[in-house]
Image (tube, rainbow, N blue to C red; front, side):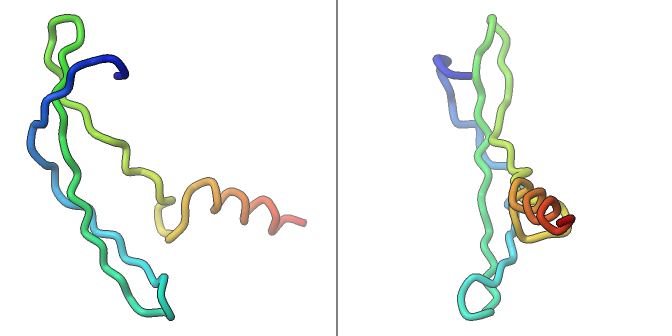
Length: 74
């Protein structure tokens, strides 16, 4: 969507991230996800950032989980 004009269109439901980054202390991070409106070919479309970065059931990125899975086979 590079090169288009965007307009803020409110927020989506917040995403909660649980992690243990500091001395095994629980950290709960609530991320507000903004929704944007962009006009493409005369039609309004609502867009947002993809938050599927973390592999389901893990606390790591999909790429890191795949790396660990690959090296565990050796």
